[in-house]
Structures are given as C-alpha cells and as structure tokens.
Image (cartoon, rainbow, N blue to C red; front, side, top):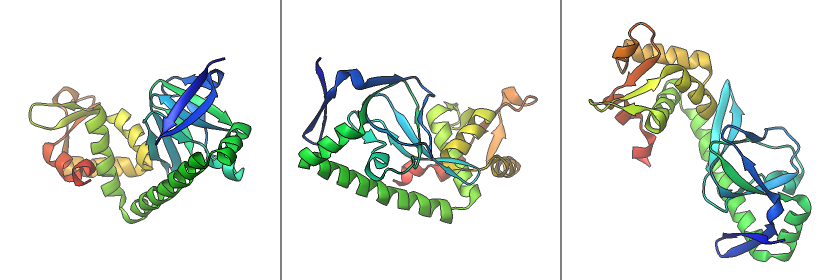
Length: 226
C-alpha cells in the first residue's frame, strides 16, 4: 500500500494511506473530556479546537494549514481530551494511533523536537487567551465577537456597515468567545439603544437582521490591532 507523506518544517512523516479520514463540515472529531486514542494531521480543510468556558465555548485554535497536527496531548499524557475538535469545513485528516506516535517520537528526533516546540507555542497562546477571558469584560468580548462574525459571514452594505443574521451571530459568539446567551442579549440591547448597531430596514418587524455600523466595526476589529 502506498504511503501518504506529510511534511512539516523539513520533517517527513510517513503513515499508511488507509488511515486518512474525511469529516464533513460541522462534524465533531472528538469532544472535550473524551478518552484520546488518536492524534490527527491535517491534509486539507479546517478544524476548530474549542474549549468550554462560562456559558459557552471559545476557539483556542484554527487548524487550517496542511500538515498541522492536533490531539497529541492525550497520547502524551494519557489524560482526557482538553478541547473539542470540530471540522469547520470538509476536512481530510490522517489518524495516528499511539503505537505509530511513539515510534515517530522515539526514532525521529526532528519529530520529537517539533512536538516540543508546538506544545510550547500552544501553551503560550492559551495563556494569552485565558488572560483575555479573565480581563476583558463581557461587553468588549461580545462586541469583538460580533465584529469577528460580521467580517467572516456578514454582508457588507453601501455605508460600510455589515448586515448579519441575529440568531446565527448569537450562536456563533456563544461557541467562539464563551459569552453566555443572557450576556449576549443584554449587550445587544445596549448596543441597539446606543445606536452602535441597528435593525436592518428589511427586518423592522421581524428583527431577524441587524447592521453593525462602520464605526462599531472599526472600534472593535481585533484584526486591525494585530
């Protein structure tokens, strides 16, 4: 059987092609708290790593670069999964079991070094995210989450604002920033009262869509600050 080779930083990892798995968009690959028996290498697609916080979830990392890997922690320490992995689009992954992982670590120093560097980077990134969750008030996190959603899935309109579907955004903010639904509703009511956002003209009665004003987007766009 042919081998499928994934290269990372000059390192070639060879595993059986039969270990490739396809996950459709929205499929849960594994859940936080599950027993971990496999790690995964991304061939194609995008996977979100989410962790439960407060009244929702927050996205710790997007795995969207071919040959990135995730899920290795459970193979290293034998503890339950520390996050949930969900395919955000149709994704092709190579599944690596404990025996193959141990063999690669023990017999390939470059692979072992890659694992160490990756874990270190993720710990630093997680510390930053945790600090932000602790230090940022719900209003700011809600506003940033709304803008993140609008830039990804909203419809830009003639005046520079973004039109979004309220319920879809409400659910997305809950699962991506950890904002509880009650907190989101309270913040949205405040934004509407202050006219930072407004109901779309087509939703005057149904209130299904709102428009994030250009100023609101500019003020709360984290990408412009990175």
